[in-house]
Amino acid sequence: MTRREAARQRDQLASALARFGDSLRGSLLERTTFHSSGCPKCVRGEGHPQWVLNVNYPGAKNRQLSLRPEQIRQVRKALQHYREAKETLEAISEFNQYLLRLDRDESREREA
Image (cartoon, rainbow, N blue to C red; front, side, top):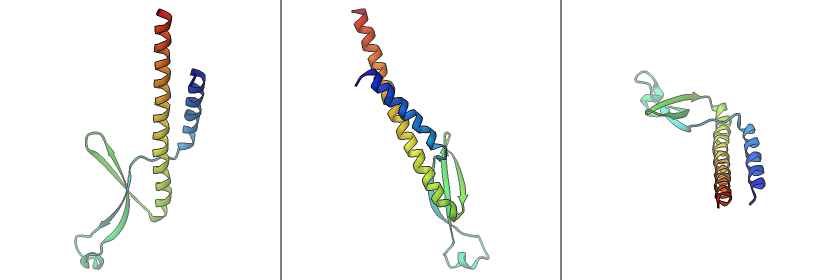
């Protein structure tokens, strides 16, 4: 692959990142919550189903956001966009490493 081809492919990938504006990082969890007393459902052991977006941060910090059922589809799509954006960034990084190796090799050839 030539330098021009690698740079062109890298730039195409970088321009594709613009479509990932609605990305979300985290995990979608389905939980069941229970009231401590007074709720017939909880007394029967059924509890209340709940969807949560869970995001981990450095330092063992965690944020959970309760979601409404109609938000689940949107959140799943945004989580997928995040994974696709991450894969795209990895591909861009690979092209940049390739270009660095070309620069290094060309520099060696000029010195020799």
